[in-house]
Length: 266
Image (spheres, rainbow, N blue to C red):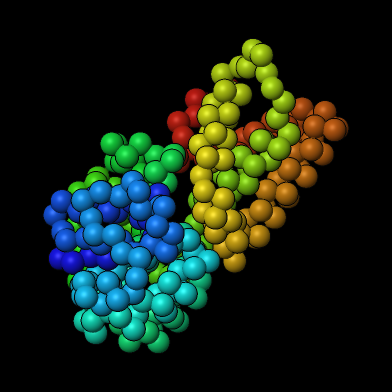
């Protein structure tokens, strides 16, 4: 299959490495210097080259801010039967765009970043495939992600954004707060070091990626929940109320019991 990737960033390069040995691949990138580390693929800097390549599948790997503009720029140069796809972390506005585009489409979200995930062991990572769109396109990505060992889930566009607002925004915001108030420790404890490792991973992600996730229209509601919990916890701490603290700890242990092994309390 002839596959065109838009954008030679981290995820674009990841897909090129993944696909180039089994498919005829090309990458379109407006900044030529970003093409220096792309191998085993055709490298395009002009729209005319896209037209001559005649891609059968386009994977849009630019940042979410430019996802739709990138599509709009290249679509006049694509064959009518080409399938267009995105891997955006926020899907707002894409359903409406796709339905008006005239192209078959598929939308997915590999929920890991090359900076943070162990790309040699992705069995603990997840990918979302939007249940709307082209059937064969969904089959292609389901097969691709399945070969990587990813856990695959199917959601609608709206369900995806609601899920991401919770599963990514909450830990990201919590990590930001930790990083904002932390002080250097010469002898950090185990828990502190674990939080530091998480912070290093998150803060090494691309700024645009972090912005994309936090600007999800459903994020604000999730952050408000954090504020409410902090307010309740701070009140208990200020009052030094052992009974209320025990009740609070019981509440949060019960909340995570399904996903985390918690030792029974006497």
